[in-house]
Amino acid sequence: AQSVTQLGSHVSVSEGALVLLRCNYSSSVPPYLFWYVQYPNQGLQLLLKYTSAATLVKGINGFEAEFKKSETSFHLTKPSAHMSDAAEYFCAVSDSGNEKLTFGTGTRLTIIP
Amino acid sequence: KAGVTQTPRYLIKTRGQQVTLSCSPISGHRSVSWYQQTPGQGLQFLFEYFSETQRNKGNFPGRFSGRQFSNSRSEMNVSTLELGDSALYLCASSLDRGYTDTQYFGPGTRLTVL
Image (cartoon, rainbow over all chains, first blue to last red; front, side, top):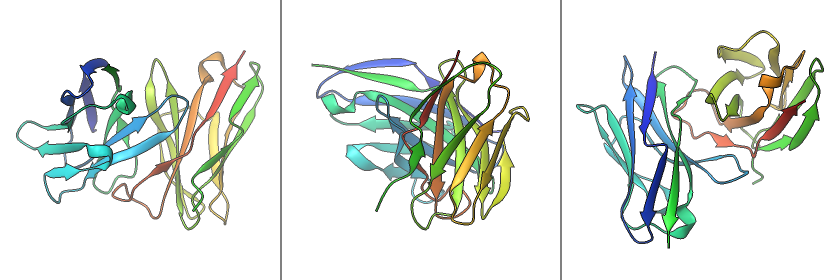
């Protein structure tokens, strides 16, 4: 069965600093990987997804993630944090051909002015 | 284009009651999935429907059920509510089966069981 581990339940960065949110996955078959963001009292919004095309995936709001098979990682980065990035971020995995998403426990990102 | 809508947004029930939540997917989307989000267990997959058929189911007891109508709208039902069923229930829709399609989430229904 596939699984996702997000290291760090809380991450704080200064405005303008690099954002790095970590995600490691476990999957017995080539995975599809996703990052979602959740703002307070809202549903989830897809930031980006990896589906075996380019290993560097660019998403919305300046976020990107790199799929590294050797490290079984799919870390999310943004070069310069903005106050509006404060939210909870979820990494998710699905096995190709399996329709359900398995989510990590989430990382709450705080931006320090 | 309207997004995924869920009704009601908030709900308060007592133990032993049953509840029905509704999800209207984005127009043209045929796949609807349901998730439960709690502080302790995080986001957990409940079930997925495609063309009125349940295609996948998570590890939840039989008290949790769902259905999908011919217009792709979906409902989920929880019978004999327990305190632990208090959660945010999220619905997501996508064009087709398979998670290579972008899943669009609704705002959720927050269920409180007293």
